[in-house]
Image (tube, rainbow, N blue to C red; front, side, top):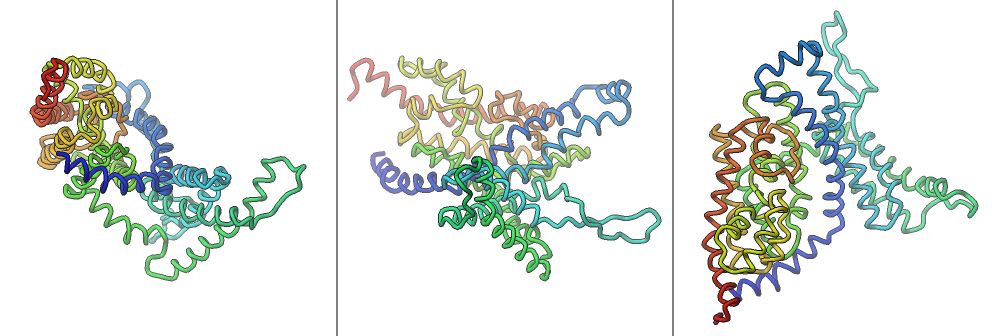
Length: 439
């Protein structure tokens, strides 16, 4: 055990610490978080549109007319369909903050650059025409949402790097001292903004001469597909969860670090499921979405530690574990587990690190098997908050399917079985310490 502890302290933790402090990963994480409130609001309307209540659709149609569902889902489009736009602004804003330059200007320039990189032409079949024609001037909604997320992320970081370079090198227009600060900041952003727009414009012109035709196609083929395969596979998901748990074991926020890379993939998969669910599809395309992990894997927080808390309450002999269980059960029901990870502790604890890693890996496998075989409904693209208590969360995440709630219960029991023998060893040590008989 001491050897494992030394490896974690001397080898893993220094590397993980440098990764956790990397400003671009932090900006990706914080920028994507900006989209979460909107997506959750949109999900509430999505739930209202598809409540699993017998006779609900007929009642709504009689009360509000046949177009009730279309009108009810207006907020869904207004929130989900601007995911990339909001994320691009948020990532640029947070990255600019890390560099201590004007974040608002960086965010605005990033949005403009993202729109510039997006083709505005859409196919339109006029009445009586035999073939579709290309019409300009229309912003493609699909590319403003999850499909444009990777491009928005890349452009946000590139545009902000260019912006901060010019600002830090003082290559800007300087206004007299009497000019209001807001006006002065706008003119300071003029030269870097011009350079960013020019670079993206030239790159777009260059790409349009190739078979790719647009930057979105390049990113989708070169970056999006390989990452999508990784994030959408069982092996890739197991690797991601293992890294999350390993980082947490060193005291670092593993979900934030790994989520900065994998989060966009899982959010995009979630949105694909959401669209299919809205269209009434019975077989949703993706298993691995953000809700797969938030709701079905991390029951009680990273490490699926709600089972550990319940073991403390029901089976602990030591007063320390009993008291910790009582303190942690409230937050644990809302998937907040810092009282356990740092209070037990799990962090840097070689004994408890083993089930802390194994339990979520087991729930990933169980959930995948259950959903891939059709025993349990797949996530319906509803952005259930990660703080949603168990049973309720599984029911909502699957679009109102009882199977989702049952799966959460099965995963909880599996995690309990994994944690229990390790917990008994730890509890026995603490009990011995309290009785003054520890060796």
